[in-house]
Length: 109
Image 1: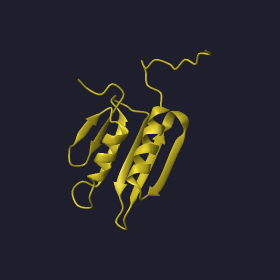
Image 2: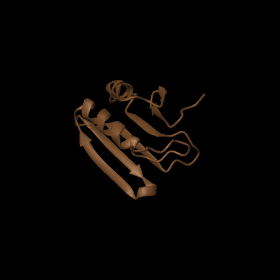
Image 3: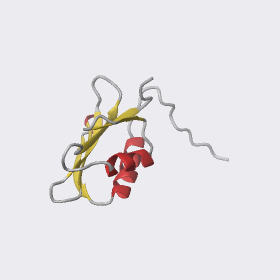
Image 4: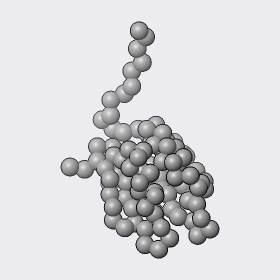
C-alpha cells in the first residue's frame, strides 16, 4: 500500500509514506555529504504539482526547496536547525491540496 498523501525518499533509498514531523527529522538527520545527500517529499502520483527537498550543503547546513506549481510558489532557503526544517516542512505540506482528502470544517460550539 502506497502513501495516502505523500512520500519521502532519500538518496540512499529509504522511503517513508506520509512521514510525520519526527520521521522527517530522522531522515534529515541521516543525511551526509557522501552517499545520502538529499531527501525529496512529494505526492504519490504520476505528475505531482508540488515537492519539497532538503539537501546537504558543502559549507554546512541544508538547502530547503519548496515548489508548488498550482500556487506559483518556488522558495529556496538555507537552514541549520533540523528541528526547524522538519516543523516548517510539515506545516507547509499540510497546506497543500490532496484529492480525496476531506475538507476542514469549522463549527461554532
